[in-house]
Image (cartoon, rainbow, N blue to C red; front, side, top):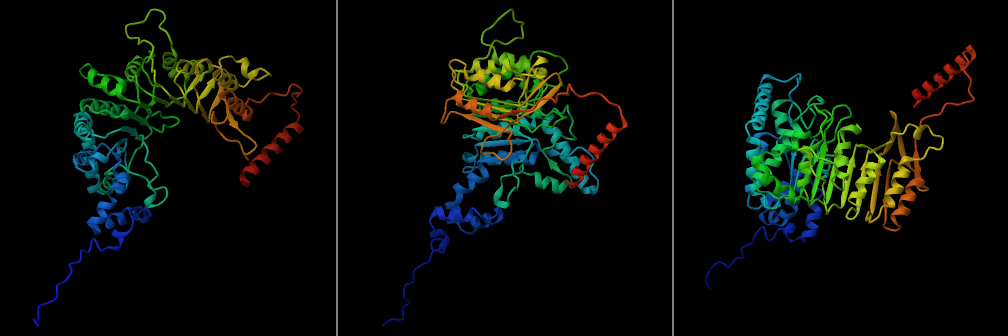
Length: 489
């Protein structure tokens, strides 16, 4: 017999891997609980594993991606848009208000301060030379599945893979903060009330989308405004240059969802908001309109609400006036941080009653100009009157009314509204009227029954003024007791 070696079977280490042989749903469940770094190592360890996990990986890390206005961050967006497998995955692009800090930070080395100066110059150049728009046009032109574009001033704390509450950051933010030794946050740059940065971003984004012939279904501006430093879009954000009228009109006509945070407070002239009216009129196919305001000053929103609620043209119109808006497909209306009167709110619902199915009111203040409404001993709840009228509107299709942190006011006084039912241990500021099991009228009646409205304290008519020392001592004792209780807590 010959001494020829026996044939050997060639083993494919990837095919023989135990992880590769695990059913995909179990493999996804296992890798769901490991950190981002460990997930990257698993994908690098085996081409078969990388291919198996790609859809899962791309959905988590590339379906929605956040960027900021720096050359490095925007270049990453452009590179992703050109990637053959990642580009189709990116459907939601976030442009954050992250930017290099422009205020003094102590403890920075000379090297870090030099990098910060370069970062600030880069940021300024992108804004004023059109670099931001040009890079966005290049990216948006390649993203065939782009569905949502939003501008926001916060980071989502939902990156639970790396620990509960871990934030999703703008691409390049952590590296820039490390290089410059200064924070990079979506802040309001020292809480300046006249900060025009959101307006600049919105103008650049809309112009880029129009120039790229992109057709997202949703355009969102989500800004968590401060109490004394309004942070939102002013009128200039909605100006449409004549040369962009056609592409912007096509962009807006395709939108189904439009979310805006408006800062109409610091207007130099008290004009009707005709620029934003024209912008909204072009978004004629909206099914969801969300308007948040950076100030609850009723004067800042009343003209816009009056125009939105108008059903018919009346009187002679000025050359800049816009005709009434239609929005024949509107199904959901969200209003946030706004002050209005009951007839105005009722008019808005009545205008869109045939199609409107959801009404969300968050931090809405219902104002009553009648000073006797608050001082009257009968004290009819203004929200009760408003909601009762809404529930009886003809042709109404409302299925949900959600109330969150609503208030009422009159003559400079504001009162809170809370809700409590048999299942609640303490009052809640949120309530949802739903027609899942009852009619809208019954759902509203349940809300009214659970509603507790704060009123100003009445003076006791039987009380008599007495300047005696004894009464003064009693008052002092009461104050001491309250202070002691506070210290104990």
